[in-house]
Length: 205
Image (tube, rainbow, N blue to C red):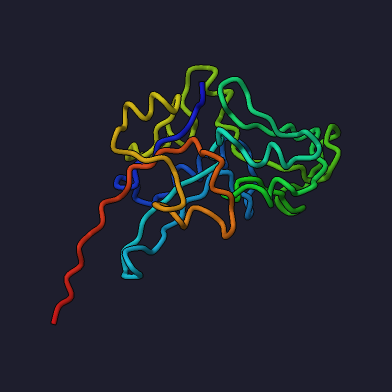
């Protein structure tokens, strides 16, 4: 099994309910670190057309971060969820360099003022953990539950592909703005997207 996310780009209204609920549920203090991000990207040959994208860790089938971590702090579960053991993190930051989606984060003191006794470092890496404790309890990840327009879905990636046949797996050709410059393209992200239909723009003369 490989859990993943589905996102309907045509439904998203950019309300940030998913990002706010993520921070609240996971008790991520206010600050720049966000486990889920929502942004609007200009597209359609530079004209004023924008495409929303909400993205967290993509729990890739071939995650670059796992191989990059010299401390062995990142692993995949039997359900394909990529998790970090913050008690093992040595803040090498190699995972941050390796991830093409900028999913791993290191907080600063203002956002994470208290170090836990079991941590080796003041600010071990943190990222989306697919709300695995909710999923194991039969609930949706909190971002999915919070979306008022049902733009997000979750489940086994093969089931998502069957349920959303018009979606494509995240790739650099269709969604170049989702990748950081020079990022790997072979990680096979577990993230399906129903693309927003392009709007034809007629220039008035």
